[in-house]
Length: 300
Image (cartoon, rainbow, N blue to C red; front, side, top):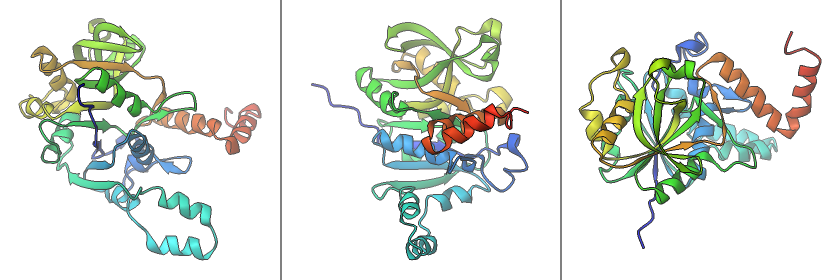
C-alpha cells in the first residue's frame, strides 16, 4: 500500500499592488479587503487549515505589514474584550490565529509574476515536497453542500499523484485573462492535462476550461521556474512552467473543475458580488439583503 501524500505547507502570494482598488489599496493590501467581517486572505487561510495545512507562507512586498499584523496576537484588544464581557468577539478574534499553526513571511523584492513569487519561497520547500498555493483574491464560496475546495484537491492528489490545478468553465471570449487547459476527461470533474496555454486569444484557446487560484504543486516545479523565460508583461508565468513540465512528462497534472462558487475579487464587480453572495449565505443578514434588493435600494 502506497504512503499517503500529505500537504503541510501553503503559499499565499500577496505582493501585488492591487491597483484596481486605488486609492483604497494605497496603504491597505487588497488581500485585507473585507468580505463582511473577515479579510480575503483570512478566508484563504481558513480554507487551507480545513485541508489539514498548518504552515502558512506569505510572499509579501512593500506596504503589506497589515497582513502580518492581522495574523499576530493583539493582547491589548483581547484584554479589553475580556474586560467588557465581549466573549463571542474575543473567541472570534483568537480563531484568526490557530494555535497549532505556523506563519512565515518572505519578501518578493519586485512583483514579477506569480511564478517569480512562488520561486521566492524555494528555500522553504523541499524538492520532493507537495505544497499548496492559494490566491486570496480568487474568493471561493462554499455552502454546506460543497466540500472545501482544497480538501478535495488533497484527496485528488492522493488518488492521482502529480500536481493538481483548480479550474472552472468560462466564456471563450475571456480566455485571454486566464491560463487555459485541455486534455483527457477522467470523470468526477477531473481532467488529465495534456496542454496548458497562458492567456490565449479566444480563437487559439484549447478549451473553455480556465485555471483559477488554487494549486497543489510539487518541489520539482522550482527547477522549471528557475529556468523560465519572462512571458507576458515580462513576468515569470507559473502556467508556462507547468506547461514545460507536462511537455517533459515530469509528472501528471490533473485539473479539477471546482464545485464552489468563485468570485474574482481583484475586480470591483467581483468583489461586490462576493460580498452580496456571502451575505445571502448568512442567516443574520439574508433577510436584510433581500429587503434592500426588493426595495430597489441597491439596484437604483
